[in-house]
Each structure stands twice: as C-alpha cells, then as structure tokens.
Image 1 (cartoon, rainbow, N blue to C red):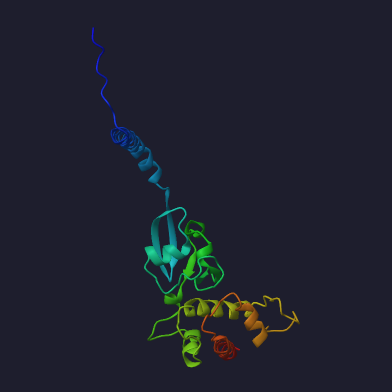
Image 2 (tube, one colour):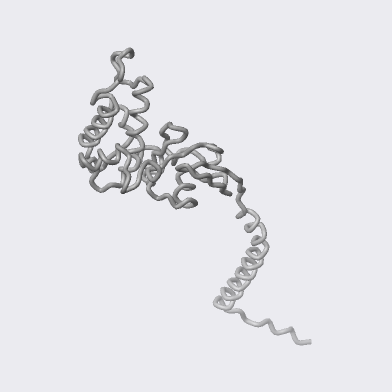
Length: 213
C-alpha cells in the first residue's frame, strides 16, 4: 500500500494560519469581555443640592465630581477658572458659606445644602461688587484668567481681617483691624498671578478695606 501523501506547508502558509487563529481567539475574547467592560463603565451617581449665587440647584453627579467641575460643566458658571487643578494657583477660588476654598480640591457631594458664591454672584457688569470695581480702577489684572479667584479670595480676606483671624505675619494679635500690605500679601499668597499684577491687587484690596473702615 502506498504511503499517504503529506502536503507540504511553507513557512508563509504557517504564518497565515497562525495569524488567522490568533485573530479568531482575540475576537472571541473581546466579545466575551464586552459585557464586563460595559458593567465597569457604570459610575455611581448621587443627588446633591447646592445653593449657588442665591439659586438652589438639584444635581445628579458622579460622586467623584469636584465642586469646580460641577460649577463649570453642570451649571455652566465658567467664571470660576480651572488652572492647575491641584490647589496650587487659586484660580478656582469660590466662597462656600462665606469661607474661601479651592473648588478643585473638594467634591461637590461634600457641600450638600451649602451656599456657594462664585464671581458671577458677587456682581454684574452693571452693578459690580466694590472689589470688582477696585480691580478695574487699579488694573488688578492683565490676562484676567486668575482674576475671578483673586477677587473672591480678596473679598474673603477682608472678612477674615474683620473677624480678627490672624495670619502668619500678624505681629500684634490684639490690633484691629489686622490690616497692612504685608497682611494682604500673606493672605493672598495662595492666589498666583502669572502676569505679576500683585501690587495693583494689593492697592485694590486696601482701597476696599479703607472704604469699609
């Protein structure tokens, strides 16, 4: 009996067969993994109520949403700026229950029922807050990107001084008010101005502080 003929397989044929097999296995694995990937894509949502600039907003947010992103992306209050997104530049400063915070470093869900004031809530072009008017008068900005955070921070600084909250440079803790150029520079040091308008910012804050006094 003659021996069966064994077909010859070239190296090229072997590579083609191997590639086709690998593609089939990969496609099957991808189809099997699709439901698992879809399940993993579902992120937890929670309801949160914020009083922003005097208006109550009920939002349903990813629990990881920062207050900054909730203001900008959900409420479209884009006056508050995203600068470094690491709490180092102060461009995202807003007032929460009267205290200044870096909104990029806190989650929106942590402020249920809080009263949030952004630059839009301080004043309007036709009816500016005294601090906004002073920044315009003293050229306390150049490119303007840091200005909303600077103004919100300056408003909070004057409130801190009024309440007698000391800073690292306060010499006499019994002095009232704790107002000086050094005090203002120290208290505003968390707000970075890349354009370098610091002296004008101090002048604006001192003018508003003087008018209040």
